[in-house]
Image (cartoon, rainbow, N blue to C red; front, top):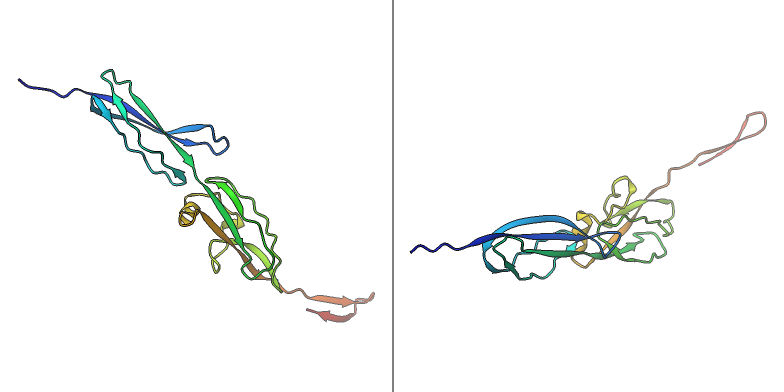
Length: 178
């Protein structure tokens, strides 16, 4: 006698939490897998910026209708600010969702002879592209994974000098200040 193990397909649906509504989840992957009839524990995936759920058990049915959903919750971070030579303080932003766009206005006072140029991920780093703080994208999320937050450092640059030429009514130069 020859025995054949019966198998069937089942679906594992992976959904990520919406940025705007924590009650909504969007499908990012729908796997169709095959297994012997009976119980299986499908693997969860890892997505940058999302917490993976616990694995669950599923019973594979002969009709192939079995499915399971895994919901991945969006991680939140704290964004702290360093004056990096400037003075004053800025409140940290808490519970910033992965993928959220950040609009940050500098409120540090500039060091003497300097102006604010933008934000950097390092004290001696360069200004982030186009002086725009990106959303908590994969790059920032990877930076933040160590302590569940990131620090943005103010970047200061020299103020260009200005020359003032003082003239009287007939156009004669009286003095020049730089």
